[in-house]
Image (cartoon, rainbow, N blue to C red; front, side, top):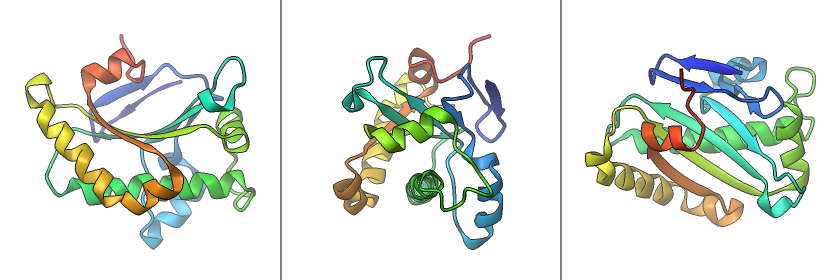
Length: 170
């Protein structure tokens, strides 16, 4: 699976269908977004080959074309709303409306590391301090949630996203 996110002008993929959930396009999100619930672009599972739950990862990916100082509040809400909504789906609360891809549901049953990743399109290496500042602002905004969920927050540019196989290369 690969797809284009017009808001960030980025092609994402190639991902296995069992590993990628386009939460922003899901039926349940379309129903709940009218209540102020926000979502990231997609969720991606990276399950360990040897089934060690400690090595399992789930990535919540948000993408932006560029950064504004005040974006961190909105981005933090997208991360937490997406974590809560996907957890609720995995628990079967919305089973009539949405089913998670196999490996993402497996992550919620086995556990592992949760990672929130902000990918910024127009942020070259010269602006890495801007990414670090945004990452720190999101971490501060989510301090209580980080204590409960123990997730990692990262803000990366397009080049780093390419090196981590998040962005589709033509």
